[in-house]
Amino acid sequence: MTPPRRRILLVDDEPLIVQTVGRQLEAEGFEVLTAMDGEDALVKVRTGRPDLLILDLMMPKLSGIKVCVALKRDQLYQQIPIIIMTAKGDLVDAQACKDCGADAFLEKPCRIEDIMKQVRTLLP
Image 1 (cartoon, rainbow, N blue to C red):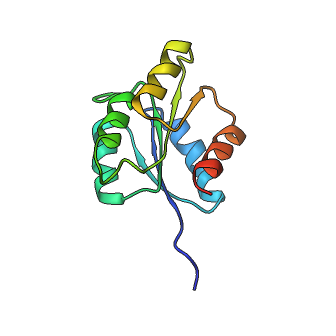
Image 2 (tube, one colour):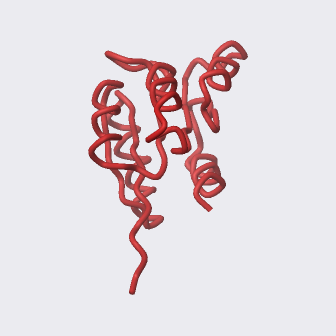
Image 3 (cartoon, helix red, strand yellow):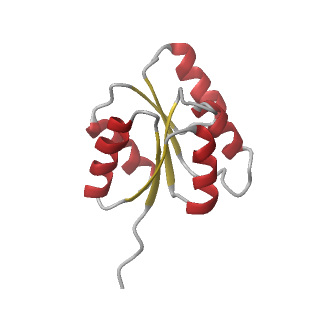
């Protein structure tokens, strides 16, 4: 019997990033759920039960930081690994991502190889 595919929720308000990264994740055998803002991300976590999240830092409605904090405070979801990506890759943002409980931080533009390396590290 084939084990179920691991599910990743990809959250970004840039359609090209969702399309490009999502296609690569699917090619690697993952099931990909998508959301375009932070509020939709929280809904998709509750309904889709992803194994990992990839979040953009700056999004409409709720930032990646706020989504991360909400999930890490909730016992039902706090074990889900979270990767935050941002175009604002300064030290303040990196520290904010660490402080909110993110498991990894990537600066945009990210190489797909770097994203996949983090995914494989967090979903062994």
